[in-house]
Image (cartoon, rainbow, N blue to C red; front, top):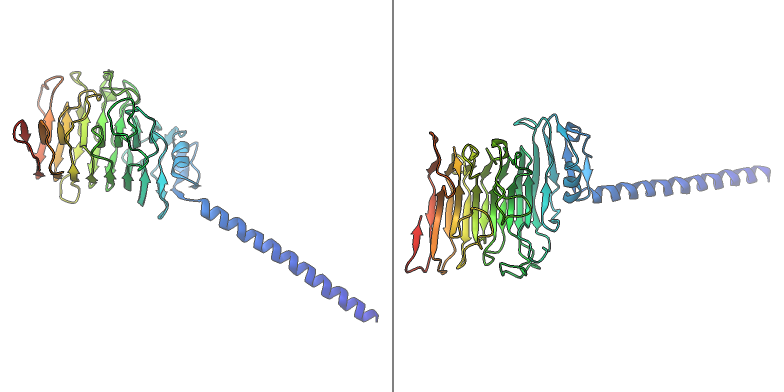
Length: 359
């Protein structure tokens, strides 16, 4: 009898402990599963920034918010949106604006899209500064392998106080009169907005206005305020009214220099299709030509526009219709420099019977 009681006690104790262990183990698996599900963004080399990034984030917006708090960089960092994690951008767009001491051709920030779709936010009516991505004064930033698209909930295309559309796929803007966005790369993205909105641009760069007031001239006051040495490579652009624009300063000595649209081979050229409409942009953007064009460059030196393919939309009538338009509308340049336009293929489809028609 005593032996039986002892054995029963031992058996009960074993069963009781077994249940405890099972519960703890199941709970541990639940915690791991929750963390894994929330980690949509992975950061490679997070310790290369100061004060330091986390290794993972729940959203791309959270990663960008933390990046904007960083003050220095000592090595390359890659912020990867893990595959199969589509996102909706913040209202107005993701603003990337860290000023990182030590940023260089080696110490870079790369946003890897992993072919994820980024849908624009539901924009504020009447705003003219909405984007999917904005780089504001930051240097050595790469945005690659994203699919950017307009939000189907943005429907008002009138250019005025009621518009709800997205203006820019990617915008390069200055952060101050003396600090521009330099040495950035926009590559291998697919950008599609809504070409029936006259103020839709795939890639937009301008230093003659602030990041918040595009219709008021506020030109840079130093060469450091220019948007220099930026690269736009291998992007597939469609369904925009205006393709790619770079506007430099109207002040002598402060022109943009070294920007490159298309690179040096077919592999780095951009493909623009189904762009243009009956209506040119509204002219609210300082020094941006109020005509219909695929690529517009103004106040640029040391520029390369090569290996791009431009095929416009069909059936519309535009008073002035251009493929690639190089201009110095504010100030004629001086000195010696080379702007290269080579190996571009331009197809303009228009119902025009008069007006300006230039490849």
